[in-house]
Length: 108
Image (cartoon, rainbow, N blue to C red):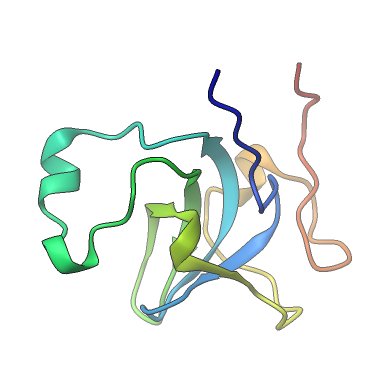
């Protein structure tokens, strides 16, 4: 049986290791669960292993807000202490507290 544990948790703010964006984790896949087209669009020399957690982020950069899907190997914790301004955050999370966002609801 495949056993995976995620390094980052829901509501945590993370940064991309190589690209200039950050975001709030709102879901985690224990292994790659996106489309083959999405995976194939990543240059082969940069393509991450499928056998690791992948994170769904409410992401932001200097120009826009969007949803990102990022492998664990490409994320690092964000220690800035600054909130993320993504407009969908209030739909999922409570107010920014102690460097993270609490969930609005309990998970099973």
